Amino acid sequence: MSANVNLLGLDLEALTRQCEAWGQKPFRALQLAQWIHQRGTADFAEMTNLAKSFRARLAETARVEAPVVIADGESADGTRKWLFDVGEGNAVETVFIPETSRGTLCVSTQAGCAVKCPFCATGAQGFSRNLRADEIVGQLWHANRALGQYARAGTCSEDRVISNVVFMGMGEPLQNYAATLAALRLMLDDHAYGLSRRRVTVSTSGVVPMIDRLREDCPVSLAISLHAPDDALRDRLVPLNRKYPLAELMAACRRYLSEAPRDFVTFEYIMLEGVNDSDEQARALLRLVDDLPCKFNLIPFNPVAGSGLRRSANERVLAFAQVLGDEGIITTVRKTRGDDIDAACGQLAGEVRDRTRARVVPIVETVR
Ligand code: SAH
Ligand code: SF4
Image 1 (cartoon, rainbow, N blue to C red):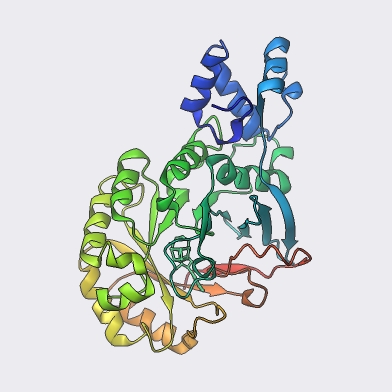
Image 2 (cartoon, protein in one colour; image 1 turned 30 degrees about the horizontal axis):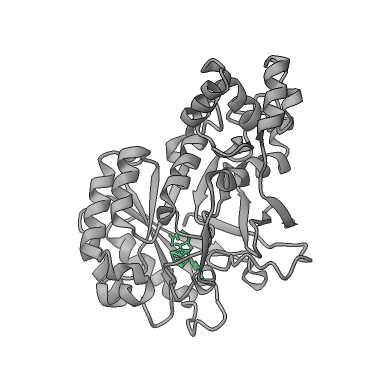
């Protein structure tokens, strides 16, 4: 562990070990976690239930530090996007989406992404590096502070601003497993953010062995970026499919359900005109998922320059949803705005050059 450790990324187990190394009792870790994650404190001097000598030691050997914000945009309805500098010219984005009954934070796990799906702006960047746990948790910590969460009474109560976290920002969380796991544990821990497992969702392009690890280590809600009903097409749209084809992916989903906090898997399906949006392909999806308990979330494609792909017409999306719905599969259509300013799904590219952007337009998810 480095001389100056960033406490933001340590889950309770690691924080307890760190406290022991400092000669402190394990319960100090709980107190520290509460100050840092529930009260949003970065200043050890404020942690008044810790001994002065320990606070002095902390000030010398530890820090609480989120990545630096280089842009912060807010739309009329409260949707907010932050761009964080993660060093060496890399930046990642975090989006807060307020809705009537919940507030969802969409976090990034990597600068760039190695999966390189052809419809995704993050994939087009290539892979820069994995975020550390402190950089992932730092997004939530910063958002809570920026949204005024810590100013409210009873920060871990039901009225918290961020009630849900989705790992749907930049990067493939299951290709950055260790940091994602530490971040998840902090998000769920009652001494930190205390979010319910059902309200934390990992979205993956289908890293099969890591879906199994997640099931064992920390089962949260699972979303699979499916996008195609057969291997030939999915090999093109989600290149990771060549390594973990659909039969293996579906089997991993079934295994996951034995431990999952919800009794279904969510399949995300981006609607690409003339590529994956026919009724026949919807019927092939029905055969693929067979009796697997699942929901579908159809995502209108947000245009990405140079992809050569087009968004399906609304009527096509609705017709496709109907085929699934007719067989009793709950199907939602994600309503997307903001594609003109790159705030929407798949357009997060950590654009560092444009730091002047002041506004974002919201992404809203509606249930039909
Ligand atoms: N790497 C993970 C999580 C981040 S991507 C994954 O692929 O699941 C989050 C979601 O955004 C995925 O469902 C992805 O397919 C979708 N997405 C990517 N590019 C998009 C685009 N251009 N328009 C709409 N959705 C997109
Ligand atoms: Fe990576 Fe997900 Fe984008 Fe595919 S959709 S390139 S897996 S971030």
